[in-house]
Image 1 (tube, helix red, strand yellow):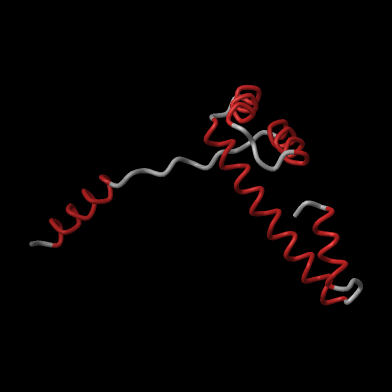
Image 2: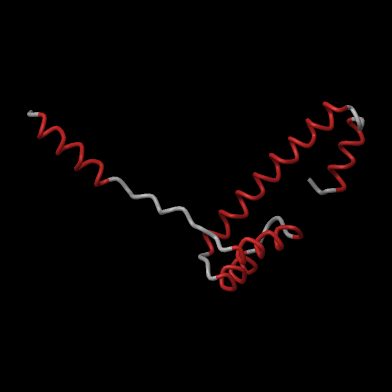
Length: 105
């Protein structure tokens, strides 16, 4: 097999692979509405998801993904906050746990 044939075979395999969907760019209005909703509702029912999707002009799958990513970000932020508090020894571990319970985390 010549080098040219090998390159053609590689290109053929690459073109057969499923293409990834390009990254979605949310508008400021969409982000504000998603964040506002996330503040009081961390998980959406299917009907809530469909309502938001329709209001924002987005597919339901993007709403699902946005909320999953936002919950993951919240967990990371909480863990960082916990480690910062523990490192500074401002609060006892019981007070940190109570704070997390109050924040419903």
